[in-house]
Image 1 (cartoon, rainbow, N blue to C red):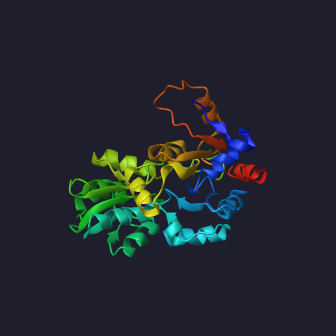
Image 2 (tube, helix red, strand yellow; image 1 turned 60 degrees about the vertical axis):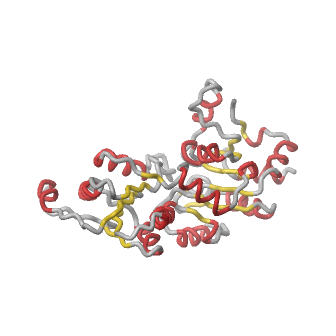
Image 3 (tube, helix red, strand yellow; image 1 turned 30 degrees about the vertical axis):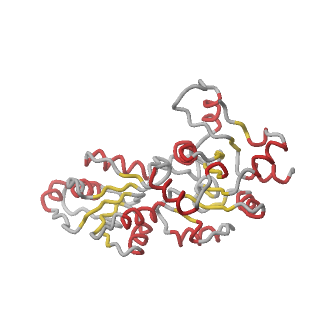
Length: 307
């Protein structure tokens, strides 16, 4: 089995594909924007989907903002979004703990966005921000007194990641009753240039190694997110499309759920990855093959306008 470029479809097949979809779930970073820059043509494509009566939801593994902050970002980049149309992993971390009836404190290796979402659920937290180390690492280990109220460690993207944070997270996780939550497994973020942009998964893997624990992931493509969006949006998998730029999160989520899938090449996955898929043994069980791919989301708009 191979994947086809969406523009290679006949008008009849493409029209049938679009008419088979009621709900669209889309990744954000690498599909709709890169950091603070909109990807040209994507807002117009999303608007066209909505004009055609499709329900559109923003499903992002980004954990640096709250849902409310994502609504504002969408508006600033010319996307129309409401709070109920956005799912981000800072929010999912708080939902996970709320469902566990969690009533202790969270040690956060991550951003203010996670803290705000926890506060929204009435959950106390600590650890966010710069953790300055006084003295050397031996003194830190000798003198640190763990907070007995901490009952969970949540790890997201942390620009202040440091040895003190690694040490404290691992220390709290010695207790098997302390929840260990990772926002998402992405080891790379879509870069605004040719430089490598390490992602949240790098921090989580480091803490997993230090603590000899495995985090429960709440983002794509994990079961917690699948259960949440399936129930929240009442999805019919056969009439749902997942759009993303990452084979290992976005497209894999779609495959797990039985959604139709569309990969765009404006983020993590490259044309060489597609060439490798199409040149591989079609019987390989390890291949993640999107139904269709496009150079950018606006390729879909061009096809729609050609009806």
